[in-house]
Image 1 (cartoon, rainbow, N blue to C red):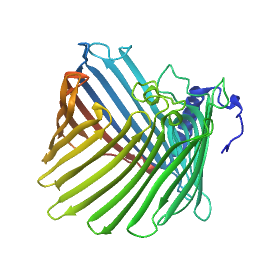
Image 2 (image 1 turned 30 degrees about the vertical axis):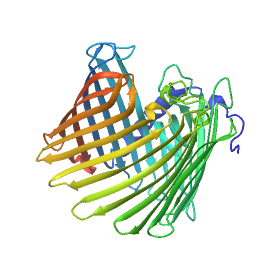
Image 3 (image 1 turned 60 degrees about the vertical axis):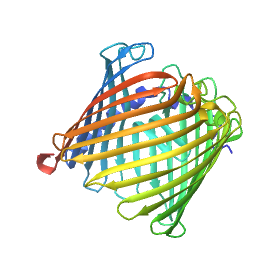
Image 4 (image 1 turned 180 degrees about the horizontal axis):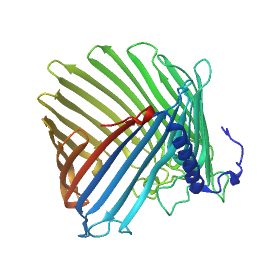
Length: 442
């Protein structure tokens, strides 16, 4: 299933993220000269977050975060659009170290975008997150997509994979494509592929994928995807869901999922998605078959039930089933209750799970409470039940400024007692500048 040549010329990407930064800067200059003559807007969001928690080794952690998003877009005289998008965060520890550094920063994305007035054609350049079929990658590079003819669309990307851990290689170059045929009201079928190279190995990652969306009649819908690892010569994943609405208030769905973890997590760019995380054993596979139904009752009530059968090669089998009840009335309250049973092959997978939550908005205030409890059949590390109780509240000072906080108290087999808290201040801004320099800020 190889869709790419054995190696791409490495000199195209040997500058890595420095090249992406330079290209983004040049794009900024182009936008600045073009957009000033057109209508353009600047929107953004600033979130300042202070967290509080104590670790199992009695460290007091008070990390402060600042998340910033900025979006600038301008419409040109020919109907096309130019935009610049930035997102990043920084952290500083006000107490003990939360990592090996007291402070750190990260550039989440920074890219320039040019969108044509027709054919849904766009070109992005810089650091960005690409989702095209089998690809769900953060890259420093170039992304192009557009509609062709008779429902045919194509997309392609090339760049350097952005790793989220400094000790991971992540590949030297990554590139891929997706071709799809679709009718907006009936179907969409896509074929995709990606390849990543490292300086030591031209075959660092090779993946191909197939995705489908079918809506043949009003009340039936099928979505799904399959992905294949050409290096290990094995399927990574199959995931399909079929849903139907036989009655106005009744929805029924069934799902099929299959994952080969060794193939799926092959050469990941973050440690959390590697087989060295201690949660997944090498060689493990999972197959799951599920069914669910929900019914909307009068007076804002919804009842649902679900069942899922899990089959693991190493961890064994498990059955997960239960019910949920939800009441939703924005003028009064939104509340819900759920109860599920897990019957598995290991003590950690034999328990009764319950959840109770409520949300209420009172003027500029919104408050919520959420209780989640797991009652094990047998004690795990001396603990019979694991729970978390979370209380949250927010106050909208005005349309741009909101203050929120939450406190969570929990107990688990891994942590006897834990209290975590968070305070968040969010500021939104929106500035529009039209031709002639007219300016308005919301």
